[in-house]
Length: 259
Image 1 (cartoon, rainbow, N blue to C red):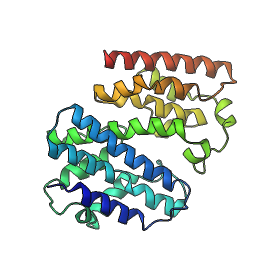
Image 2 (cartoon, rainbow, N blue to C red):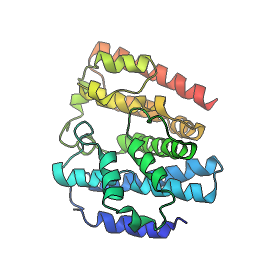
Image 3 (cartoon, helix red, strand yellow):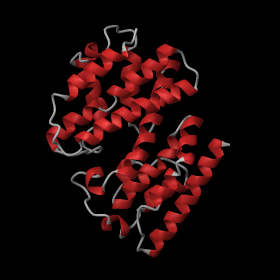
């Protein structure tokens, strides 16, 4: 049985071990809360059982706890050098932190697989039906809020230690590998990112990895694609043309998934 009050209390106790003043700390706490709500909404729209709805929320609370240690040690986020999902899995299951959140070990493997796969380019093969379901829910819930975060937060807050000025994006080029991924309707490999806009397009291309109509509906209804693309003024002609093509390709994909 999943006690969400226990989960909330344990999450609060966990984050109290970290410095609230660290750049990015509040961003991650707020992000987690939004992902919890997203996961709940997706699970409810799918008419899952009450236990699966609670499990989806529990996974959402835990999915990014590895980020807090990352903030503590390197004062930023680095998805290339640090796999925060695997770190979260380690402290939850190797260090037995999971028992602070749920006493029963019935769902341990589902939780573990969902967290470890939430940030991967592709979900690993071999998951059973329930593991795959919750891996997909947390991936959608997480990516949906990443769109919101990228709209609401400043460049400096979003890219701690990497970029700090909007001009870096206005004047940026786009790598061919990143652009070609969008042309193929594929997510961007984080190792292909070179220019500032590559990081931004990597977020936009998340749409190609989403799983549920409910998620696409939110993206369409909130015009996330348009807002994210229009956040910058593209000074390079080729870049501007490429961004308009990216807008067209992604919007068409979203329309297909919402019809």
